[in-house]
Image 1 (cartoon, rainbow, N blue to C red):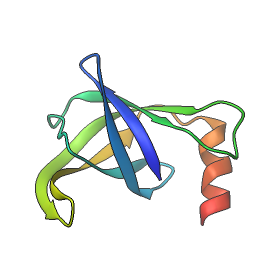
Image 2 (tube, one colour):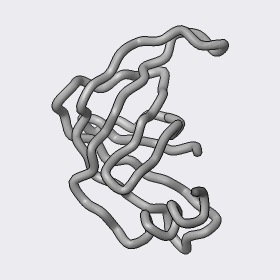
Image 3 (tube, rainbow, N blue to C red):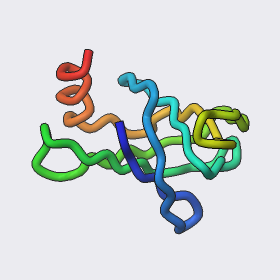
Image 4 (tube, rainbow, N blue to C red):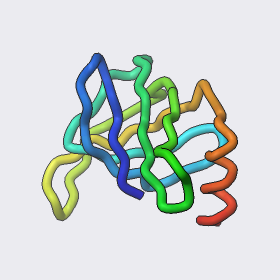
Length: 92
């Protein structure tokens, strides 16, 4: 699922490869620092407005993909909006 995330007041494109109630695994050309807070904006046709998730980066690493070098990182959510449960029920 496509997303954007904001880290230190800069917005980056990303892709959510795994999503749960507690967190997500993202991949992006940018890798935020471990322990730092980010906000993840998830646009969805299922929702009236984009969902914004706030979380802390738990761990991350650089990986090589078909699209080149990408950052892959785990985020644990601090907030748990009701829209998250709506999306999870639709994709699982």
